[in-house]
Image (cartoon, rainbow over all chains, first blue to last red):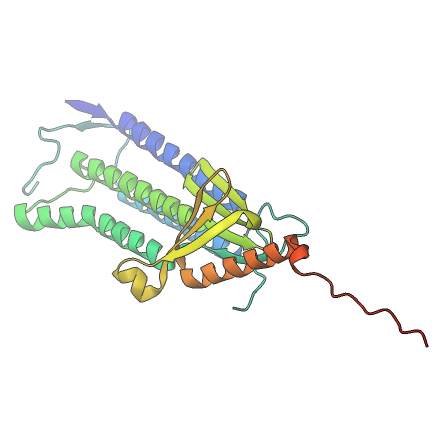
Amino acid sequence: MMISGHLLLTTFLTITGLLLILALAQLYHAFRFSKPTHMTIVTSGIFIAGIVAILFSAVILFHGVHWSGTFEVQTPAIQFGPQ
Amino acid sequence: MPITAPPAFAGQQPNEKTLMIMHRHWLVFLRTLANFVLLGLVPGAIVVFLILTYHWSLASGSFSFTLLSMAAVIYYLFWWILLYGFWLDYSLDMFVITDQRVIDIEQTGLFDRTTAELDLSRVQDVTSEVKGFFPTMFHYGNVYIQTAGEKERFIFEQVPNPDQVVKTILSLTNLVEKKQTPALNPVPKQNPPVKS
């Protein structure tokens, strides 16, 4: 079975996008209901930095992936043993 | 107990003086944080176990590697957002004592916030409870306020030094009661001047 790289990437970006919308909603909530204290700003900054770090690691992990091609899905999808 | 004046909270009246703003004890969030740290180690532990036990190897660019990388990114992104959500829930829960009322603000979800207020004149009874090993060692617990209002019982959950909170509320209710019952404190009559 072959799976399109574009389909895989689109699925991943959709899920990631939804999670980022949730993150933005949380940030809005933090500044909406709390006084903009020093603690709120610091924790929000840490939160944003964490998201950036995770997304950056995704860019590094997907560096050698050719999304324009197709993936051959073997059964099981995760193969054990040397490849 | 000295009464301090911390920064104002949202909804404070113009002539209202804020005396205490409390959050749950920091240890409560620390225990949640410890659980999240364990959850964060799970994917890495699974991969290490598979590599060591079943000699699992991944070729960069292969479907297996791509799929697992995607799963890991989505897992950690969700994990991080969930952790921040728990932090928000902890930090936005607050208990406020002013010279006029007590306020319980509870954040029960991202889009669910409840604010309950109680006038000090309607406080009937205040008790504190410290239960368990960690609450006893770190001096935090619950404060129960029996009311004459619609909500019969206010609960300040897991606040630091609950006995001090009880003393503060009781002293404030006594002050309010004295202000409202001037007949119990009559002004002493002055003797008329003696005519010579």
